[in-house]
Structures are given as C-alpha cells and as structure tokens.
Image (cartoon, rainbow, N blue to C red; front, side, top):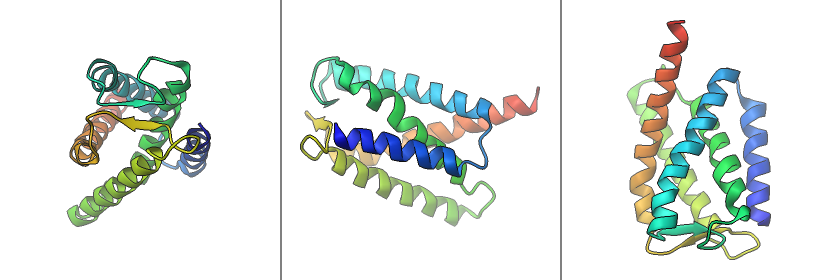
Length: 153
C-alpha cells in the first residue's frame, strides 16, 4: 500500500503542477473517461478472468485508489506533454518513452507489499506491452474528440 499511496501522491502532484495545456473541462473528461474505461477493462481481465488484480482477487476497498486516482493523472501527463505539432518521429519517440515508463512502473507495482500492489494471474508483461500503445491511442483520440467538441461550442 505504501507504493500505491506514494505513486498516487507523486503522479497527481506532477500532473497538476505541470499542466499547461489541459483545461478544467478536459481534465474532468479525461479523469471520468479513464476511470470508466479502466473499470470496464478491469471488470473482465481482473474480476471475470483473474488475469491480474490489485492487492487481492476480491473486490475490495484497498484497490479503489488504484482504480480512481492512479491512472488519470498519468493520462493527464501524457496528454499535457504530447508533442502534437512535432514531426512524426518525435511523436513516435514520445510513445516509446511512455511505453518504457509504463512497463517499468508496472514492474515496480509487482514488487511484494508494502511497495507493490499489483499481482499477475495469467497476465504477462508482454500483454501490457501490446495493450498499452492501443490504450494510449484511444486516449489520444478521445482527447482530440473532446477538443473538437469544445471548438464547436
């Protein structure tokens, strides 16, 4: 639990202190989207198929911060710093840096408690390496959609 509390505090601090791009409306949208999207994904992979879980295989209160306060600020940082107007190479490198960060963080989250809080069933790190780029593309497209909606109002 120590690792989760530290990560939630650190990621939220960085996300909100460094935010220069995202409006309050966009932050609310990204936060809600992230919680819902992660909740649906985890409902199946975690609860139904036991691919991975937070702390225990059961639905428990201790996993609530991981589901609601951990990933949204990471998504905020990803979008805030994303090089939208840069060349394709720079955007690809940005994705690669983020994927490396996400994989390293997942490995740290797998440490034994009290530092770690994440556990694998049949899930493997390779699956995250495959899924994370897709999830980041979905996030980026959702953000672009929100910006387009805001522009039309």
